[in-house]
Length: 300
Image (cartoon, rainbow, N blue to C red):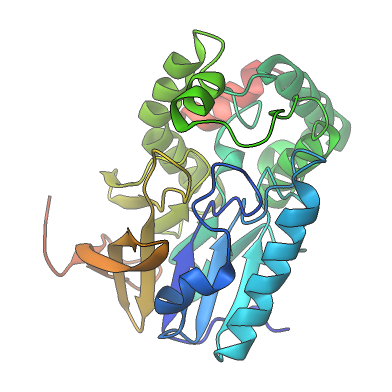
């Protein structure tokens, strides 16, 4: 299958299909979102493959999603995340001649997910794998992405799954917030993300003006150093999703609405004109408004 998207393109992330906190239990609930588009890019953590108990359902729902996209005439492209690190052979996409980068976002953090309950194990594995890949890995975007996926694959079995069937929402939220310092680590990651994304772009994709990520589940659009960072959020309880839409040179970011279990495009949040590589800055239709590398090197 060609990885060249056909306009119009829809980009979503973090569906976590199969996870008990995912809002999607049937691919058909995404029909109103997907049907108008020729290509749908699922930017990581589409399937919940972390826990062994979740994998059968996660794989089934993801296969259902791929079949559903095919049925409605929409090409599905799956990008690996840290919860589904081997769902495809794709870790990133460079679009519009390199002006726009799509990748899950786990590359931003040394330790992949520093808010994880197994953050220490994640960090140890990530450092060791980077070291094993050699000095060249520091300057290679592809090697950095490979290291995050290998660390995620290695540690898929570390975290203990939630037992006891479905848990009430507040109880599940409390369980996910444990240990007590975890919410602070999550907030810190949210605060860091835009700056880390810019550092990553400067180091590995200096020609890129826009990066589309997920991973942290916090939806937003940020402007830093003449670049645009878009996080499309997630389809988990207590969070919200955004959709990125590409058509021609137009990039549109819209909220995703949920009603009676079905999802639709909501209010337009931002609209941009994607520039040619080498342009000085990204133009907006409306709503005007080196830590990454050094962190890796300092831990070597």
